[in-house]
Length: 283
Image 1 (cartoon, one colour):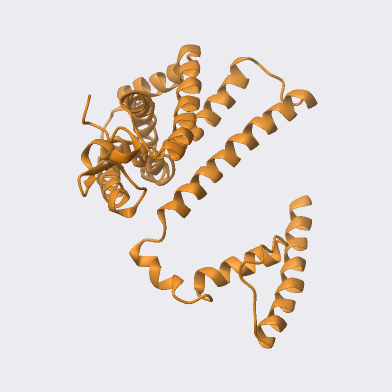
Image 2 (image 1 turned 120 degrees about the horizontal axis):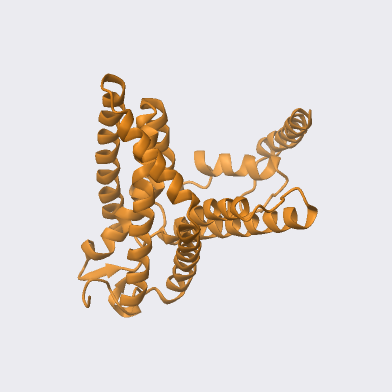
């Protein structure tokens, strides 16, 4: 396996678009292939009698989701993928053992993906299309990025980055199935708190790793023009949202009198708007 991945830190390239662009291209190619095949499958299911194949796939999905062994494997692999990603962000490296663990997990996720993909497309074009725009994007981006670890190089170096923190999605799905399998009563306050705590930790982890990736990656060429001026479309939307939600980081503030007057309007208008949302949500 030597030479397949970058190895130790000095041999690994930084997290940059020079690598991620190609990883995204590989992922987009895989996504496009599965999207087209899925649409063909959906059309075929409408025009031909393939109920037997549909039933087989549905049985496979039920067995996979109901298998305690698969459940444990999914939990263990998703946790290991998430932990390994955190270590890689510190060491900026990808050794053979880490790659092997990531590759096995990725193949496992892909095996789970295929029957779900088939069933969703058997159920129609809209069902399959929605599946591809949600779960399909994440799964195939992970698959394409793992392939990119071996294929992509820049200035003689390979990358350590693959978005294995996306495995947190698998952990949440497996966690929910585990609660059902163990017949845990989530209406009991203690188990409800435990469930909320676990889900919160995983979601915070996901958002934190996503922010870490985005900020270290930097802007692609397409967005660099937006950062030339302090006040641009992105920063203005960011300012309004942090203001109306009362977060107010203070990293960008209006310096003109007119801008400050508009900020007052935004504060009062935004807080009243949020209050209306909260009121309607509580009804």
